[in-house]
Length: 250
Ligand code: ADP
Image 1 (cartoon, rainbow, N blue to C red):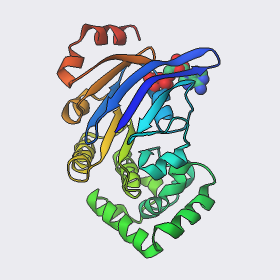
Image 2 (cartoon, protein in one colour):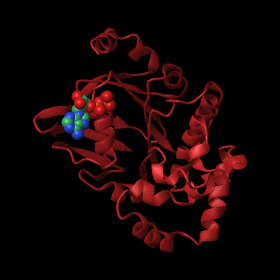
Image 3 (tube, rainbow, N blue to C red):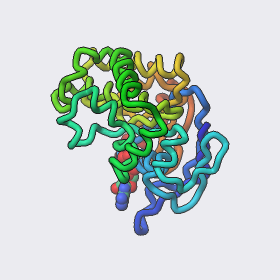
């Protein structure tokens, strides 16, 4: 589904991503781990079209998408979740779902949404889909609460819901477990699993929560110094001496 070939990203002389190559199979949940500064976030930005690589190629669904904007990738079904933007905190959970495209596209906010809305569906259909999404996430009871008042875990579920409004194929999740209490964490894991197994979503997660990774992810890719250190199943990666060493050097 996704193929990265020798990706390099330089920031004024500093090489944050250094010849990174791997493939993501359709239907998988891939974990991206590694010590701070390993280049995970930069790699996400490259995959999602927020940054253009210095060199290397990115293929998505068989097509060379290197350098395409996040907007173009979004329309192809490659979506990255972001924290609910500050200005959306005053909107309700329901409204946040109905406003998904501008937040994901990130440019020409409302103009984009309006033109997208025309080809997409009537407002009533969008609203219905938003309600269905809230029901799936077991968030119906907070539909009319302001997003800013939701708990950390509810916000994460809502962020996941925002990707569901777009019929995404590949979803990039940035630390989904961060700031989520144990109860909602189980729920979040369950929803990710259902989206993966029953609705055909492929996921890539940047995550530090090893319990979540063990439960959900195969393969696990460990990055260090901008490149892939090792890739394999959870046990293989966790027990590899190079992984331990990379974290110790953090
Ligand atoms: P991780 O997400 O694995 O912690 P990052 O991708 O955030 O790693 O960062 C990798 C390296 O690139 C770090 O050393 C970081 O300081 C550097 N870096 C990231 N973004 C920039 C930027 N915009 N300009 C300069 N250096 C950057």
